[in-house]
Length: 241
Image (tube, rainbow, N blue to C red):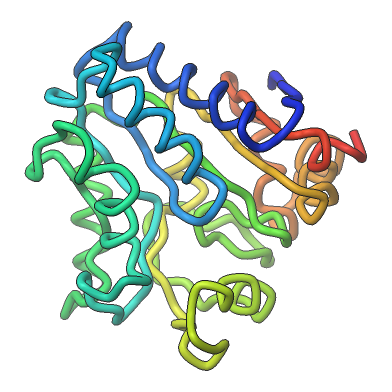
């Protein structure tokens, strides 16, 4: 596990984008695992700049998103499908057929989860997985619990997660209470993992992830067992390290 401390959010975003760009340059057919939320927005902006400058090319890239709200239509501005298009996909040359996001409006949730896992395997697995982290140390939407979820599954969101995400909605009552998420096992199969965190509100989660015991009560702590993890944090998120 390598930890890089950036001065601020913008520097964290640049460093993260350069690491992802390096993966894409070394392997133009990379399979990228992508995240949503406020943390990676700056990273996506930097990747768009690198694309427009001709440094990177998305034409042979495949992507798999970590999660999607359950029963939220794709055209809803708060869906992660909408988020990814607005913040990255609409601005680069990735093929629509190469974009994979769980279908929150699926009729059969078990089939959707199983098919998503199969698609990742058929693509050759994820070369680089980008992660954010919740205040309660969740990665993807894998909430603290009694065991680590293995594969893509339906999640009941914690109140803390719903409250944190309510800033994107008109009110907390509008936040979906369930989501489809890659499991911890799905995430750990990625060849390389890049975790980003910014702000003092994430300091405890980063401390517990890096220094605490490995426990499903701190989902991100499992990353201690992965052979190739890079954590990029700003000074505030690193304040307890």
